[in-house]
Image (cartoon, rainbow, N blue to C red; front, side):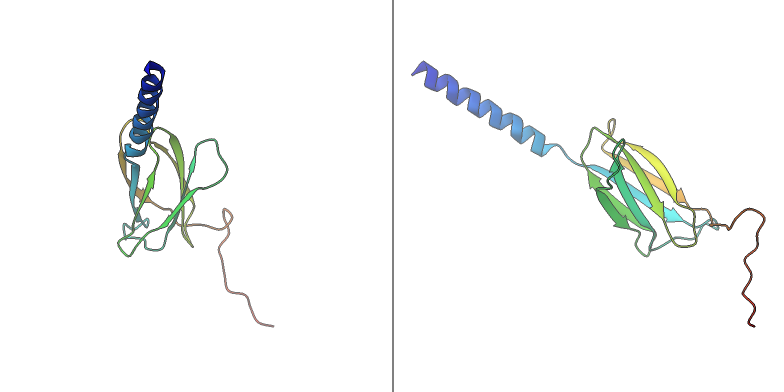
Length: 125
């Protein structure tokens, strides 16, 4: 009988630990994306991966207000990559080990051709 009671107590404790893991709130990455002129940038693609991994596991796209948000597990470090046509890709570390949310203001730089070159329309023959 004592063995059965101990086994039941151990099982109940393990269920409690599992419930604690599931009840941990997610870490929220919230960002607003701007152009170099300070205008909101809708349609920017955001990708997030764990630091040290190659596979991007979370994706979002900025809305008409230039905003996006992602929920990820707490307690890790991530790498955020934001890109948009005509702009340089921005990469930034995000630390989800200390708080439960980060609010970012991202300013993308205009993409340029090779240094010193100016793009000109092709001439017709």
